[in-house]
Length: 196
Image: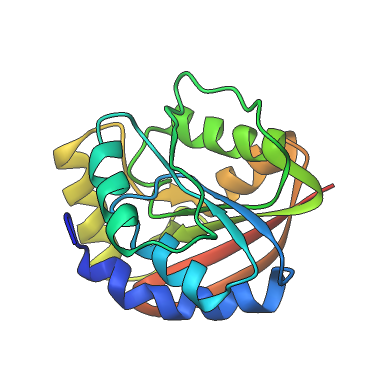
């Protein structure tokens, strides 16, 4: 597999466990920021009744397409070119929008756009599922997350671990309500929002 991620390999099973508790067996899921496609592949095999729509920026699509062509299953749709800075949702509504380790990689404004895009794409009572690290009351949950945040900012000053409260406020403005905040391995969280 091209651009294999050990982190994606490590967290796919705990994420699938959460998804299994909340998604209908025939759910349609839009993944924003599919990367190499490891989560698309794992979830589509774990939940054979779901329909998984992966997406990525144009520059990453060739690798994603190659991996899905080689290892994919019939319930994974053809990957969508999606640039948060430019994309407006015009596809069918979905049961869930999922993004892993995206919010801290993109800028604040693109993170807000991701949340808004999810609100546009979701069916009524649909779920936005955001996986990754967050700060609470302005504080990192662990020292390792503080170090990671500095590494992110050295790489791109617009990136960084987001404030939980700010993400909640952004979601509420988009018509999404927090329903669950799960502690996950490696100092991450899974935030679940419902479209109201």
